[in-house]
Image (cartoon, rainbow, N blue to C red; front, side, top):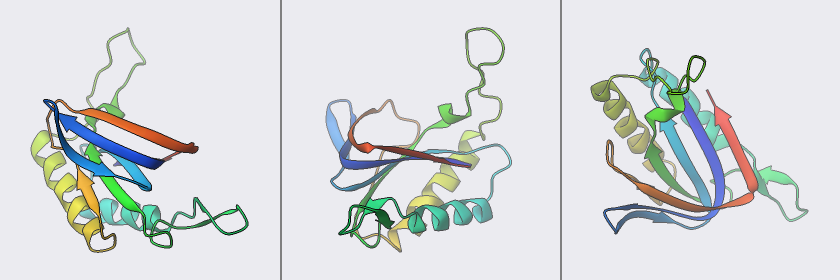
Length: 144
């Protein structure tokens, strides 16, 4: 499982011209599910994400977590995090989980995050989405 976390001042997901998820200060997280991933792996990454101290404190040090700043989450499924570009110019996605498993774990991540963060917005699994954001910093972290 992979979480690509971007600290943002704002982010949103649109589908066919309709905004389906929108946040202000927080994380926009692209979530990739691998073929052997489990709820235990999801729980480990969620814990790590919730405890990352990458928001500035009163001294400008990155010392606060998303919960410390009442941040928001925008969670977007993204199987292309499993792209393999080692051979040729067309990526393969052989390491990505099958859609049934991936959707189940994506929904599980959403459910667990809603237990810890007041505003959790999402994209739509399998949809053609347009994601826009203002990356704050920029600050981007990959959790695997």
